[in-house]
Amino acid sequence: MFEGFKPQSNEFLWGIRLNNQRDWFLAHKQEYQDYVQTPMRQLAEEVYDAFAAAHEELPLMMRVSRIYRDARRLYGRGPYKSHLWFSLRMAGEHWAEQPVFWFEIYPEGYAYGLGIYQALPATMARFRQAVDRDPREMRKLAQAFQAQDRFRLEAEEYKRPKGRPEPPLDQWYNRKSLDLTCSRPADDLLYSPALVGELTEAFESLMPYHRYFSALCLRAD
Image (cartoon, rainbow, N blue to C red; front, top):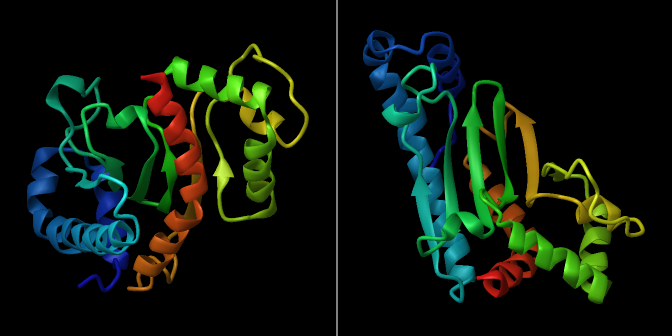
């Protein structure tokens, strides 16, 4: 049962960021297992069980990241990650091209939200076409997003705008992807079992955006 992360969770992640080498990791591996790996998996499983039960129509899969970086992609960095995450994603090999719910912990705090890791240009082109053709549905979503203060829209924008729709659609139209993020410093919620309910409710609040962009991804295939 998830009882919350501990201050030692963030302390370990600070340590691996500042001492990203095998000897240090091996000397602190038990801390990693006790304060990061185990609670992360417990959190992921409980959030997945609750959210998947409420959305049996979605072929969701739960994945928990490993601390080891791909040795083929170190690019001069150390062999370990200083941020760990889990994701609730669609089944299939093209999951990264579709909306994904995610949670991440890192030295300074944690974050969670909804995003598309590898949005296809065709998907975002379909999005703009949908807005141009009938902006009503996306306008409602954009207005609802504007009225809340939990998540921020952080996806990268095109340097050359693809168009200039009226607010609030102008904040969405020229994005290269979807990235709705809530970032928080290490706080009491991180160290509490109540984090399960927070993530489940937060992901539920993002379901309208998941449905809208998932439909675009399917049409883009």
